[in-house]
Length: 465
Image (cartoon, rainbow, N blue to C red; front, side):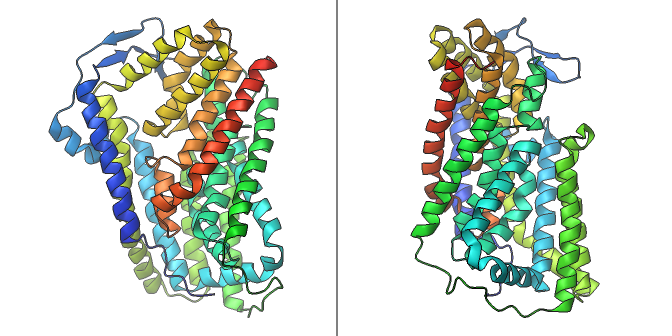
């Protein structure tokens, strides 16, 4: 297999993403002049979380944002409420960049991929089905999404080695995780938080979410396979290829797998151990760093060379930080300009005259729109659930179905919107651009929108509650 060049984000991909995000920033700033300011009253629930006070309601306030604040918003967002998660994402990204470059320089990455291609080349379609299921399960059972990012370039390189392309690798990993995240069988960050806020037992009435998981898995796997089978590049042989073993590399690879596997087990355990749920990204970052350092040293790489390779990886990946800060500044502009609550209030008022089928799809649409500005599922739950659940119940739609609509609206678009940090990181690490990814994935998003809308209407017909 040809030697990889490491995690290098191309200038074309970077400039394209920067232009798209800057246009979105400018449009958002323009909206602060066109939309009047408003704010919902907030209160603190029994768990100490800030939620909307539906009794106190909505009030008009003075809106607008000074130009200097908008220009500096990618920096000011670091001091805004909830910035801890943003800072964690940036540190997480730097760790990934440093470790992967070290793995590449010592040759372990290329060795691992050669070994995987030799082992699974003859059963590549079966491997694809297993990988898609694994990543969907990670998203659906423990809420893994950002934590999957370190695995995206590995799966992408594996896809290339098996005769597919980069977007197939992203689809098999990050897109699958996003789909599982949205299906939300036992996702603590969307279903768990939302059901708790709505006063429902956590992870109750699971049958519709399980049905959704199965249907979405079938659609996603079919979509990925149809694209992959149309690709002109195919493996030279379907038989197992020869792979020359290297004892040092094998030991390093074993050590890398054991340490990273322990991290994945801890992440999976977070579904049963609530205390771990707030630290899954930190766990993955620490375990990935430990796995990278230990395995590269085991291959015979010196500490000095490791440090130099790690630093080069940090420098290479650093441009992504600007993209992430610019994307995060869009929500900052809406909050500081006092238009986020105004838009939400307008949507709530519009829902008053709708029939039940239209209402549940409208709630789905509200969550899809808000996900563009607020990628965090739990943060969005605290904002939306106190509004949309009472609204749905007033018009005879169950809280359980409303929460499924919320999960659908939160998860799928995470792997399409250019305001999501994990997506921006992943397309860069995979060596492709956002434009190429959007061109590939929009068709799936449309098909999936139709499927999930049908599932919501089915839930309404059968009285899912």
